[in-house]
Amino acid sequence: MGRAWTTQDDVRLRSERFNSIETLKNPIGNSQIEIVQLGRGRLSGELLHGRIEDVAFSRGQFSLSVRATGVFSPDKIVVGTLLACVGGSRSLGDTVVPGDVLMHPPGAEHDRLYEGAARFAGVMCDPAEILDLFVAEEHVSDPEFWTKRRHFRFTDRRTGALGALLALLAGRLQHGGIPQGAAAEYWKRSVLDAFIGPVAMEPGAGRERPVASSTRIVHDVERYLHKYGNRAVHVSEICEKLKLKRRTLYRAFDEALGIGPIEFLRAKRLSMVHLRLRQASPDETGVLDVATELGFLEFGRFAQQYRALFGEYPRETLHRNARKKRPDLKTSSSPDDLARFA
Image 1: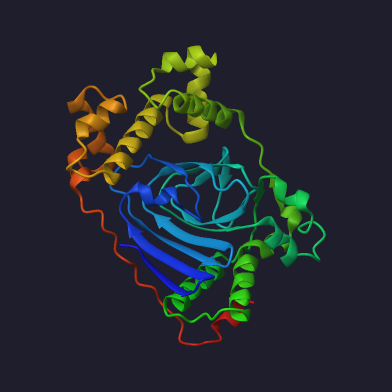
Image 2 (image 1 turned 30 degrees about the vertical axis):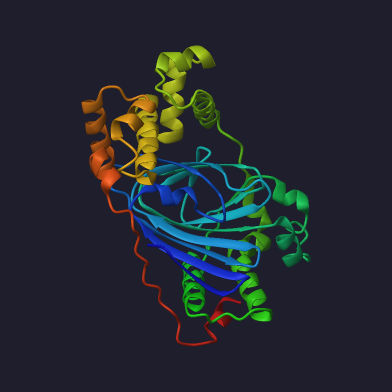
């Protein structure tokens, strides 16, 4: 199970281990991201959510290939970094490697493919927080700089130091070690600087991230599916309604996601079933009802496809104990350890 520790009203932390994709829907702050599981097996991981005043931060890891899409926040900036990934990662069709920093302005579309197990971290805040913090930096203090999606590649991102800072902060919050006032303000500045400091030092290292044509086609397909309730849709219908050649559709999915449209659409609907079953009560919900609602009519085949992706039959998901255990958090014995991150 997750557990929350609170030192004061303006400093909070929640940490949890998970064994299903639903926890990843909320990777930072109050965002709601759509997750489609692509890797086969039972996904597991850990997620730490923290908040100091109005600045939210997170650190997470998970074990299988997934795709994440959606909008983090309509009015907050999100800056994230990939700490590690097995098999690679892509954002809007562009390769992302450990150490890269991705900047999402308010309302911007988040699109990420993780080809295997990964670790990530991110911070969410009001644009004014960044402008105040870096008021002396010519580029970073310009509000226009933060209105565009940007991708930064740094040869020395200090991902180890960033992870160590978040672990130290988690330990201190767990044991009530951060008082209100000036100390909380110092920690907040430390978190923001850990994520955004390299951007302020090298603003020219970033570039705007345009949406590749292949990714745009995949987005159009997903919007079409959402419009019609994520029902079962044949590839021929997509080509007809979106006026796409079949070869173009297949090439777009291969370039953007590394799989064909049929396989992805099936994984998407299976992931929706999985989420519904994980949130349902066995006494009130039947597997067949959920499967039928999401377009699966051959129940034997559906159960086999579901088991191939998630490593268990749908009835096992419905009845599985969803309690999550709290991960062990290590703390530092020295009260001055934060100084090395300043």
